[in-house]
Length: 131
Image (cartoon, rainbow, N blue to C red; front, side, top):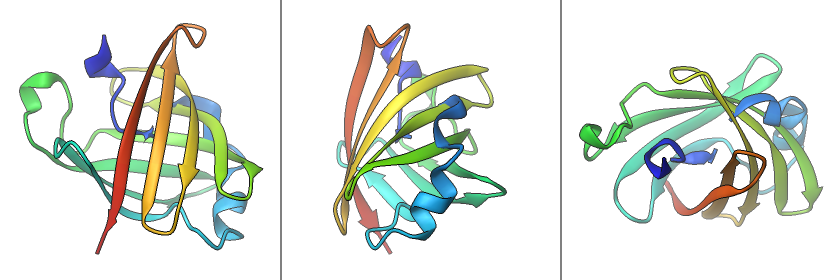
């Protein structure tokens, strides 16, 4: 199950999370958009605005056998909670799953906590910004 709780995803990065995200990101000094690498060395993503949402796409995956694939996309709804914290939902397009998440941002670092199943199953990941 944790293989499904990846990246932003995030964000990382899942679901309706990032509906208001594009405005929050656009007005933010810390900026969510750009290229990010997971600190465990397993994946890299690119985050950018996509219409009224924010999208995170896997650009590199170390081991696709673990369920993550290059091109996997999360469409996110983001809302600011504090100056360096965002909350929302992300929709995993390939799997049809929606996650709730919390993102803490620094200039070049990001921590994501994504949850599934009424916030009972959660996973935290750390990311660093890459050029």
